Picture 1: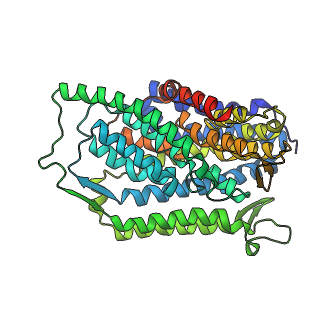
Picture 2: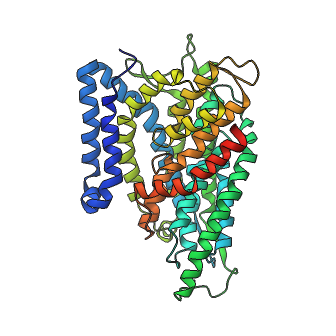
Picture 3: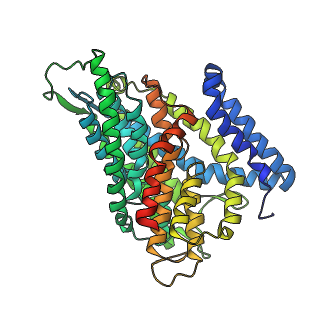
Length: 450
């Protein structure tokens, strides 16, 4: 099969993204009912031409490889965290004030590196919405929640975000990412300061309208229901760690060094580490539901709508973005990107619209071929610490630029919409990121990567 595919095969991917951006604005009701049909249409518009050009076998192999080895583990992880977090509820007399919201966002940002951006997002999104349910102006809260908790906070460990897990699998030490703490703290100070003044202004408008929280005894009634589900959350985190460590163990490798698994079709194999990860996560979700009273989910306003929407849309995104990823793999090493600031922007810009894990791997591999003699020794070559820092920050930070840049972004949007928060449209959200994130990234470049 040819290594470089024609750019026109990226049209279905662009078409699907355009539908996600535009259809909720022009045909919202129709879009909600017909998302599966639209996703199927754009997916077929990629699969059929690809099959005509390269053969049915190659087309089937490409789709199976994408669905089984990328999408399946992605959606199972999201599903497991969605279920377990939905069975934990925070109750108490907490009023969403600017100071409290900043404190929660800061806590969530740091928590993301411990249980992953998806785990922290699913665990905190409903409590944050509850605390601010009395407020009318709270869109900015959920946007900055996505910025910080769903993205930037995952930069400190391989658990935090999948790209760093891939780096760990290729020889980057587990705790190396803690080197990114000064950059994260730098960004937290800037972004949370901006948020505080925005939220304070919105808070004062709400108070001026006569809105106030229904609190009889402030601070005296706080409890967490379903706390035992933390055990299942730990199970899921352990499953993610195992998925990154088991493939390197001899017992999971054949004589050629390939990871063992179930042979599906041609070169497509569902690896045993992936199967173990899936089984553990599904078991955690099942046990969470079996051991948690339904009243807790009722208090959380738990529905399946958000996970269903993400599952449908992202299977189409994963399938149709394959040509773009193939082009990136073909041209990535020849783009002339040799400086840390170039790696930061290239990795970040593409991670905003493509899966940030393969994007990270492409530029990590590219950096490994640049002939560094000092730095981090990995399985793809020696990479300077500054270069590795730029690639890591670009992949993790700039996933916040769009709703599809990182797994929890769209989930937080969907849950916020369900709870009556008028979130920005697809393009509207990008305007927010252009106004508040890109200037911070420019500062990052000047301070850390030049």
